[in-house]
Length: 285
Image 1: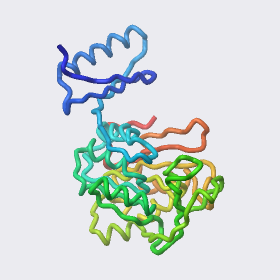
Image 2 (image 1 turned 180 degrees about the vertical axis):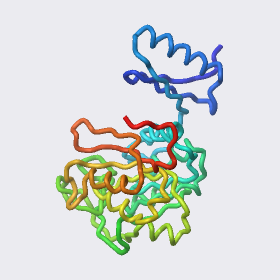
Image 3 (image 1 turned 60 degrees about the vertical axis):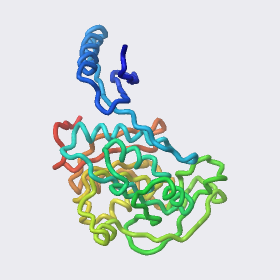
Image 4 (image 1 turned 90 degrees about the vertical axis):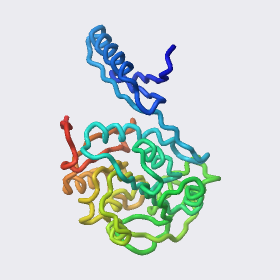
């Protein structure tokens, strides 16, 4: 009788294999490798297997995602990075579902997680769910105050809790948002104030203001090891910088592009960047 339970997802020429046990048995790994070799020969193409643990995340009913998209980036860290993350910083956290996935996946404690979410009602819910280091402030490239366009979480036509921004949307109806004044801080200011020596995994999702977040690190960007970030190729928020501006800034600071995915409409991308000094075995394609 088999006691190991795992799920196989077929994605083109790769398998993502999830398992419930903390550690997959050597005999199971051996069997999967043999199966991979046989099937590769049968179809005449090399297939690849990714072993990935099942991570269950407690979700808020209004969370914009289920956190599972972070699995890919955790895989990349484990495969190509010379470090095991000891902390996670999420800027624009929504209900912190992504941070919670990464916390569990990397075996971290609540105290190792830092989230920044200026939406007043969302951050209250996050604080009731988790014991993270949470801050109701916006991150940008200046210190001060700003008007934050907060989505009406319970009553908006887009059915999306994740589209609040410091920038005004060019294609959204203002009636779906509630403007509120929030504190704004640069990340280098925050790191100096809180005594943060390094950031291992940084996730940024701030609806059109990603460049400003990265720019606000100043020289402290050298203390960030890995960055997962969204980028746009069309201006959706007033005065926003586009993907190429952000990519150039990261490249100038010695980051290597490890993963890139473009949306079907060609407007938005997800990318993963790692400081070159922390990469091992990665080859640019």
